[in-house]
Image 1 (cartoon, helix red, strand yellow):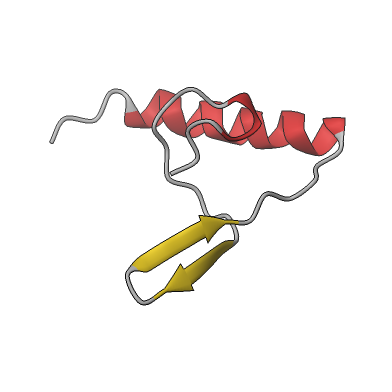
Image 2: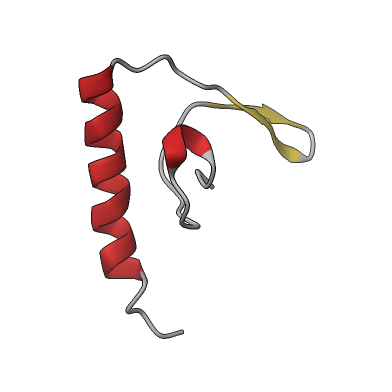
Length: 57
């Protein structure tokens, strides 16, 4: 889940590098993004959130 990374406030699951251990994800690898890359990452997260928020399970 990427909530809290790069200012993302929603609960989203995106493909990001992480460290796997015996019990699953043990750490998320934070990549240094430049301002353009960070803006694009946030835009992707926002796009997915706008789709996800309307799904009913």
